[in-house]
Length: 352
Ligand code: ATP
Ligand code: MG
Ligand code: FE
Image (cartoon, rainbow, N blue to C red):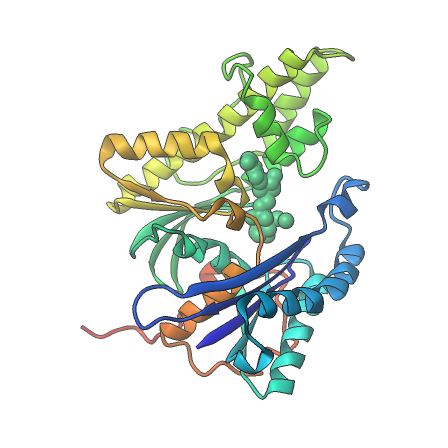
């Protein structure tokens, strides 16, 4: 079975073709991505209407590119998958519209996928895929969640951010330091030469005893420290502030992930979402896991942020797990707001 996946929830148009195998996780045959970051940069954030229009321009050329790279044609596509939500309504509608039109023209089924399920399952495309069950740390631009994952579609929320997401904390701190948008990667590059203990920044909810996060207060603290540096901070001061900011975010993510593994008794952590590309987060999680004999799995670096591969993969894994016949039911029923733990399980509960 070959699944064509289309991602258009925010500011990246992604298309991919995956093929299921008799044994193991599906294989990524080709994927292509167009990031709108450069277009939105002038505005300091994503402009929804511009995002929708650009998805319209990119999605079919990217589809052609993916099929060419895989040496396939539309006739080889068995199922068309798209991101049904959460995300920007107009942007989602582009992917949904194109996917449903393609599927109707081909006489093939269409399947709407949860964007966060795509992120969550993306490490299955890595060279070292995880096994169920595991704890998932989902750290993206819009979400910070710890989930218990027992199977495809069986997700139990353990904790989440009560305000800003980890990616947002990176982006907002970077923005007020003048590092542009989205600033996560720039801030982490600058942090390499800085001292992580140069500034005392808060670790919100570190000792709250639950698995929730809060990052809104951190950016205020970063703003206060940045102001104290005056109008012309030196590169070394900025590097110190970047390193201290990153250390505050990473420490909370690492400690809460360890707490989640202890609370569930599970020994496997799966990290996904854009912040999962952060080298310092990976270093600290790997060190914590090594000490305790746990395993940590990450997506390939290129698949941490939004992409079509994770959408095609999630659809293929849902279908393999027994999701009912994909249908046209969801044709234009996008869900801009859609909590992951409200998703259907693809298979009926097993009776043992
Ligand atoms: P969501 O999936 O929650 O809707 P999103 O799709 O915008 O949000 P992603 O594409 O998964 O989020 O990730 C983007 C985020 O990842 C941005 O906030 C970006 O700054 C952050 N990010 C990417 N690379 C790094 C890095 N190396 N260090 C820290 N943050 C990073
Ligand atoms: Mg993005
Ligand atoms: Fe995302």
